[in-house]
Length: 631
Ligand code: COA
Ligand code: AMP
Figure 1 (cartoon, helix red, strand yellow):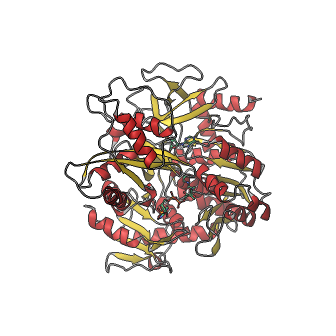
Figure 2 (cartoon, rainbow, N blue to C red):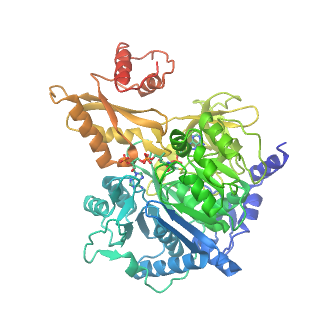
């Protein structure tokens, strides 16, 4: 049944050079490569070394030159502003070339970094592609992060410029972005030369004379040509949560990234050039980078840029309206979006109001797809619903049901099998290969396929230590799970401190760092607790310093505000509880895993090294008080 898939998969693992060289031949290279894989600098493989390439050229100029200039490149659908705008490939090329000209006029050259802090507007894509056109490295920061997080990224990647907008528009409020940019720059040591600001009518920004430039003035420049870069040069840096508070700057190269994404459009998503693809995510996340921007444009599709939410813009029928109106062939989103829709429209009644017959498949990723949500989507949409698993580090799916090759049987709870290029294994903590069905560390045998991150920005040692040292010869995904007898992969949990809130990856360690900075807090712990819509929510346990007489509710409210101010609303940190002490081992290590098990209502063995077993009852009580603990 899986003969075709098996043959392609085998070739990708046994002859990766042949496989990926063939995939690369679909793109335009200014100069072809010396080596398909250059393994001279392990653990990273450098793909297409010696080649010269430009990602923006392949996204835009190539299609216009082939006569597809009149086709829609972007459909911007923004229920929060009441706008629908179609942008053709020719128009997008013109805007990108002119904005690149404007950046070049302000001194941006190949290798410079540019931070982009914008909501879901076409200008965000224009800015990303203009950087790519110049060989500058963009770093998009999600709008739900607070000024301090932005400042950390400014200091790490030292951008020449920041491109921002005056505001973002959420369902319930307008978020002024510009004051956050100003505050971030006042906090950071590195000071970007300019901020280019898109003024939106809903909240106009105050400009700093000399430093701030209006988007309109910058884009009024002469168009700039594509600058060829090495295929191995960075295209972007995307910061993601790491195991400590400091975010990791995941670096993506140009050539390998484009080859893998272009390949994925046909083989995973079963798309044809010219069709409409919709990734309902945000450009601030990896899904947005790969499947709102780069993959659809590389492949010559039309991408839908949706500024709104699955519910509340105006109701839980927003997705069906967009599918009908723009004839979407494939929708990609996080399961949390479907849980939100299901909550508001449990019987899927609103679907009947729209003609969604253009839709051929729904892809879900970003967090575990719970079978109930998956079944609901299958029943209501009557198209294959495909869970697939990936990470910021990889930029595309590690495991998926490759619809464009052949549809393998769907097993609920599994993102199906390793995608061609990925040699996925499960190892025990001591490195022994796990048997089928045995839970262990999910790892990928080196070399990693194209698009996988070649390094962390400014942190090559952290790259090696975090991902490659524990299991030599393998990439450690930090996901735990198993592979069954049919080769299906199951992702069960993270092995680090990462939690997944509404498909957003967050570090509990990062939140603990913020909570610990509260003057009344002696120590703290944050765990992820079950939430019906967001999958997980962070919950804080606070131990107060002795002698604090302030009411607990006040400390909790301050702690919640602190996390919102320092990390941002995206952390969705709304609940904390004050406890007398935390469960610890005799050597003083906080037993977060055991606390987690109590919150999840799972059976747990009393840890042999626990300092005082009685504390677990107190934790259970505290969880019940704030409405958690299933036991
Ligand atoms: N700029 C500013 N604030 C933002 C923001 C942005 N770009 N994105 C989110 N926020 C804010 C939200 O307004 C919210 O603030 P609040 O606490 O004042 O309500 C907070 O950050 C948390 O956002 P979120 O977790 O998205 O919750 P939500 O209740 O607004 O929406 C869902 C929940 C499920 C509808 C929404 O998360 C969703 O559509 N998710 C699916 C798609 C997706 O984003 N996937 C990610 C990777 S594939
Ligand atoms: P991010 O880097 O933000 O894309 O988050 C990556 C993490 O999200 C992975 O390491 C997993 O823990 C989780 N994840 C992503 N997709 C899936 C999936 N399909 N099933 C289970 N977990 C997933």
